[in-house]
Length: 584
Image 1 (cartoon, helix red, strand yellow):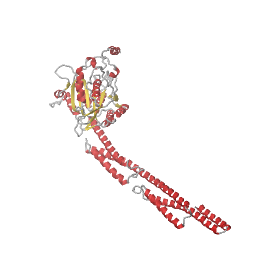
Image 2: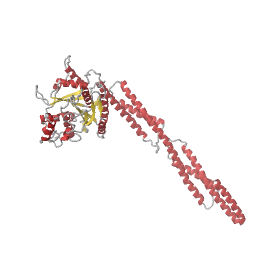
Image 3: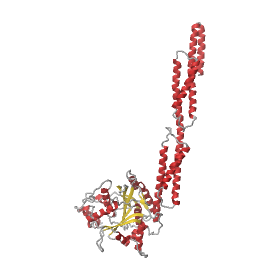
Image 4: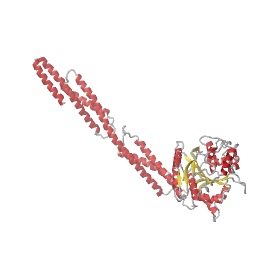
């Protein structure tokens, strides 16, 4: 531990190169989303949830994704290099265009860097946004990976393969970081990680597309030894020396590896990089200050960043030519983690088939959502409080069939990657899912029908009470306010008119009169109830009129007869009135 104490002391006493914020230089804020061991791969769900929120942002979710990941031997500066990419993207993306992004006297910040900092797979918690020359909007995602061949963590080849496999499957550009030379050993190891065991003859899908998009081989600290070379992106003849096909039939192990890369990747680039300086690579005192970084290294990092992130160079993640959207990306990450969480590593065909499966499932989901949206927009017109309250069964079935037809056409129009029988399975599954959703809409429609019927009855009940109440007040006032009683003939005519007027008002105020949705016997039924109520009101008015008529007759008798006779008639009259009132 003495050497560590000396190193720490050196960081403290070296003043002229020290940054103002050393912790930021060495301790970044990458989100670890996965980790591996010899037999399994574990997804970190809490950080995946954070990533999901970023991918669901309104200005991100519908963008195509470009995913740049880096892998390579432990302690060769992968995270350090990724932090230059972060600095470049912060200057160039999101409608910024800062030209002096590599300015000195500042610390390089971002992912944790230094001695074995990165664990598992980490994602940078900011999604950068760029627009391609053709107008396509892209979301850029950066992945950093744990160093391979770590003796300190006793990493096996299986663990390294899982880390690399996840990185390769998730990325659209896989950077592979090596030091000084691209050796036969590097090629063999990369072959093992990429092919999970040299499966050159694995059956590929019917689209004949490569498994992965781009591989960028980065040779760091390239020395000036041997033949002449130039730093930066290497030309095809240099790439061919390491990665081309052999013109002979005899293929040694190295040539076998070369052929494998051309099988795996659509495009391969090779970059030679100078050393960032001895102050960076040979001491423990470096704190991230760009003053101590070789300007030539920074210049070539700029060229490398341009080759990866310039709008015209961005490579989006695709499945057989169909771009993956940001809102879909997490589904792929989770499935990749599940594939790697087993004793045996998945074969390349399994990876390719999984990519297609996920895409089919997403298209299924998209088509199903299209059906649901179409049905919901139609069903929204149905509200138990308005006149379009529910659909007849045949109406709903017609709407369902049209929405289903549109959804199935949407799925069928997508580019397919497999045989018809395989695609038919997904089409059949979509059909079943749509029918299952239709049963829900059917049930909702049935409930709307019941609710509507209840509302209609309540409406007619209130309408009948309102009209009968109004006419009751009018009729009784008319009878009571008359100077004398109403003659029977006139009263009979009044009865007829009032019943007719009440019926006419009922029909005039019936808001369901022209609605075919309710049962037609409801209105006549409540019309009959209104007439019965009117008869009841008129009977009460008739009793009052009889009373007034009796009083009037007794008054006439009193004038013509003596008091005694009048008294007898009065007693009889009151008995009759009492009987009428009692019977009423």
